[in-house]
Image (cartoon, rainbow over the protein chains, first blue to last red):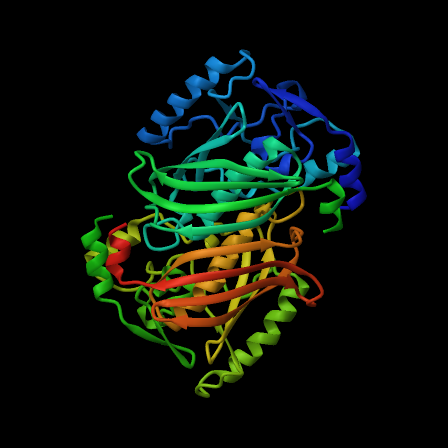
Length: 245
Length: 245
């Protein structure tokens, strides 16, 4: 894809309302969780992967209902730091938005978001993200499918890293999009069995200029077992940074 | 899967010759690159994902031929630290090995290695690993497919982390299988365009008892651009460690 084409595409993007917060579609650190494209922007209705499907197990559904109820209650009630808001999730950030010739080129692309590249429900990454309205914390309910195997019967370390990057990157982009991952430092404490549901929680540690320092932990849903701990550093960038490659 | 079943399965696994080195099938840090299952062990011939397919681009093929020629020359010539040996790669470590009732249970499983879970050639992770016979270095040629997208047109940070875990983990397992990833510390320097081919090189820094410290870098094939740098720590474990979850 020509760099100039990307540049002109992004130049036309703008802020859009989602729930009771403002998310910027422009780049939003690129992940579809963060684009929050309005229904009116869609050329046709995309699949929102953050909504339940028949593959979701009992624990995934229980937690989803718990946080989604708060999300629905929070809608339209303004900023309340204690409330959680669900983020929609698509397998392409920009496919469904209207646009000109450059967007058309992206639509033609076969590229798909890594975490949403398998449509078979339950086979790979099943997850839904919520953020607290004061943007101090994000929370992800993650059910690991059978195509994520590393050690026999357990989730691949790279798949765990992928979810940590996704959650912390989403968090950072809520604070100031666009951002890029600068560092991930991951300590693996205990393997995650395939098929299990875990909680991934991120917390904003500090902001220093363009830098966002975020910590993250992956734990069992009852909190009794810590699977993974991580810190992440994100840096706000201009679109030209990415275009320079 | 019952823990006792896994335990009894592993108890029956043994060392197998691959090329001019000895690799242990037992656990081998779980990734199929490291199982090195002999043809005679297969119930039917599996697909070796480390061999070229039509999706491989010109640069991927050029590098593959360069290192594979050395691998073929090295075969059967004993230990020579300067030579490279190709590692075969399957989408399941144990599916094709013969075994009893417990292996049968694993064969029935739908689980697939995360990095080989998409069979469409060129769509996701295309890669081949080589190791130097003195086990001081590993090298991976990696072509990133369109289903690995993070930033528009570029590879997801989690997909890069996945390949780093795969290469360094393979390297650690050659030194002493089984191992588990204890830490990954990844610095992202420059994004990787989708469709491009990069080199991933790992170097053994030191061994301290059960710990293997390995560094890794991801760079353009001409060496002019450093995309990612990382350090990794692996710990040798007993099978019971995994079974404890």
